[in-house]
Image (cartoon, rainbow, N blue to C red; front, side, top):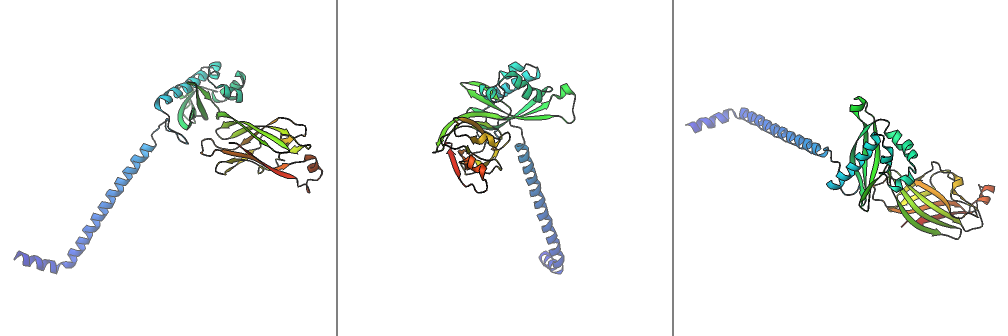
Length: 315
């Protein structure tokens, strides 16, 4: 009896039942969609939260993460440097620099005081560290200096300075390279042609550039001009991936590149714009438009054609 009634009820109300079933189905699908959306949003939020946790030992650009014990020692060294500067103990701060940093950047206490201390520590500073690049005995940190708010009382527009400070470990002694200076390396590669002998002596590596030191002897009977410097296309640093890096012509003049016929061991410096921390190694330095007879070139620049390309391998 019940079965017959139920059958007739379904047959008489078939369209209504189908409509209600569809509505329930839609509601169920919407509910599932909302649940998945909330779960994914929470998952992304958790992931973002984890990724933004401050971890100063995690190396950002290149190299291994810094071991906790090493970081503690190096953080303490940099904080000691900052403390000395904050307390006007300039000699003590200067003594924490490597000999190479002193030689290349601040050859005496007065130059350190004028060109670093007085600029960064015009008032007391605090700092935060982040491991940036690690390479064997050299750990480079991005150091953010901020005003000591408790001292200045300035809570708005807090002044910041950023430096890249490298901790060098040599014979278990840690010292500092500051102001973007990373390290120096000996190269000692020679290129000899019939006209020139070029020694690439060394390279100074900075956070945003590299500076090569060359010594050049003229073996010909003519004055030679390595480049006119009318553009920055003819002297290049070539990387191991064939990438080309431009010459920085700041404070460099064509007269610096003039090698007289009597010249022996003329020293010149070439600076290229290359970021530290990439996987690109040094391949060569190229002079692509060397004027082999400068006197003839000066007489008739338009018809002069005695140019030469010289490439010096750096490995």
